[in-house]
Length: 637
Image 1 (cartoon, rainbow, N blue to C red):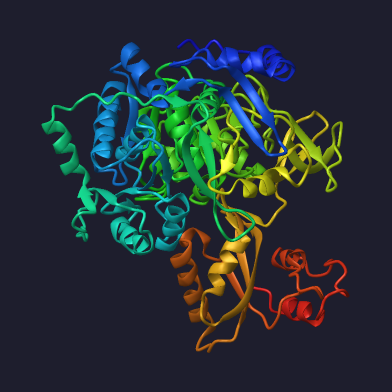
Image 2: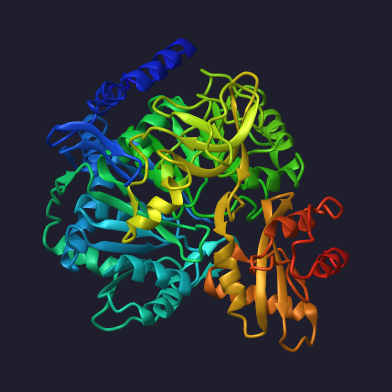
């Protein structure tokens, strides 16, 4: 595939953007022509944001794995597709060429078929960051199954909720996972989750940590033994299932402002075109470069910029099983030096964490292979941007500050590396096809520059979500009902004097903790499950490392033997119900919460108190009990 659509200058960006707005169908038709289709589409785009109904490349037939694997097997079979770096630096890294990855994906796709998988089935994947995770995902896509990857840090309850929502019939997992100096018992967590999941008929278990696990006769099978059965049949080829462009590719659950996570649905054709286009352009990918995205594949960043974006471009994608601070804080820099990484794409949280260790871990490391740096997950603060630029990029590497969401499928607003200007703390300009609009609370467009308000998008792009699984009305109310005929991002935004965009944070009841969205209602529901808790309210507050921390105000009527002990108990409850990622950083016990007379909790007041603002709290006279606010202020942690 020639990257005829790769932007090579600011003039080309301006032309591409202009064409994508004036004639989007012709623009995206030209881009989509670069992929392998079984049948060309009948219509490039059909949409309305009221229903909402969005269809790209309607009537087109394809299989995304042929675009990620088969065509590269023909043109560059021995090029590295995946380089894997283990959690333990003493464990040998692995490289899978396109030919090897294609073979292993076909092999495991046959394993899935042998275990009853059929086109349209939903398959839950709960695995460590090992190459087999990529193999499992692509094997699902090859036979037309819909994968639902669950992040390895989620609890049994969270997994059960997701499996039940999607009615998965197969789970792919491992005995355990290594993460830093910890071992996580994935299979036993799955066993607990499946007590309430009668839809699951098969569990395929990979050996990773060799910890003892329970294997249920008739339901549980070992990955390695299933592979042997396929080998005994002579490793038959697995023909890629022909999929409609609008067939579901995967479901990925994300937190919302209500307690129940929602399954964001992405489809085969548009998602493929969008992840590829954004990968090739934002990172200015050149043949044989090594792209290191440090995200976990359990999040959308891993789906789009470890697997589908890079592999559909014939790139080399580096996967890392561990964490940046183990066995020491130089681990990222060791990996970059060892594999001569060209592109590093990581989160501001990781950068801020590594800043805290000073410059000693970097001193002896050769980072000269780096050409592009990127950030993802949350807006990057100026101090971290400069540290990254000076100490990692040596002022020679453009930093792309990418803004996007699970629902967008890929990057929407970002500078293009070395082509359009970068500006600390600004995502800068929309990519071709993206039409951002800033509105006030009433939905009136704020035109011109030097404005700030709520960020919406007024025209669909190929990677936009299509629905929330099994509940289309929830998709409509969450994203398309706040402002008429607009996709509402839930983020606040500023457009400066030069027309550059800066994301200012969430404007709804969702927190952005370490780049991961966590719904306040979801955490409150989990805290309220503790037997001694009467009620709770969650807000975000500025956190030096995570960006936002979780501050919990809790009314407790249980027996306090010791407040610190009770706080630990509440955190254990949250970890058990959601996962450790949602544990509150601060828990303040209160006798009451600031409520209006209608019973609504005034989180605005709690947010200000959590942020350290105690004087300018606005009007509190309408509260049911204004005295509560004074007590909360007095005992602030």
